[in-house]
Image: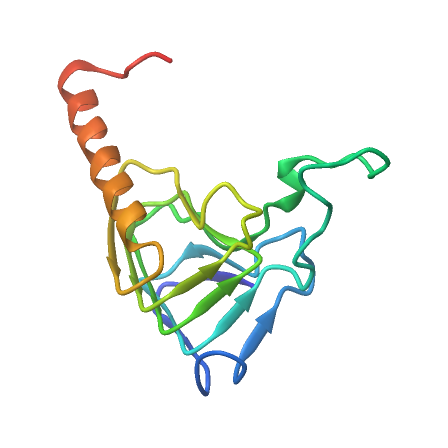
Length: 166
């Protein structure tokens, strides 16, 4: 589903876990793609980028079909906006997918679980310099908070001395 609007979008389920599950109809594209919105709020949901936990065996063993880590990466939410957007995910679980953040704004993850089954590089990929991220009571809080602080420090030093090569 592409979200492209000037207002806000609230998608709330009946309750966390098995109560409200949203599956991607086409696992080749994100379950939700945010192009523009003031606020996007997901709450009490289970988001599934694909129904298949193991699209191919990794690491591959002799006799397995060709497979690469890219085959295992399915974005559940792609934040591809150009103007600042606030993404809030509360009391939710993200299964077999990750958040791909490529746009400016604020991201707040509150009591959110990421179930990558050990098959993805990360639960959240941040590829934008202008982003504020708050992680509260989520199962990636420590790692994401440390990486976010490190990314912001690198950006501040880049602004002072220019881009760093390599």
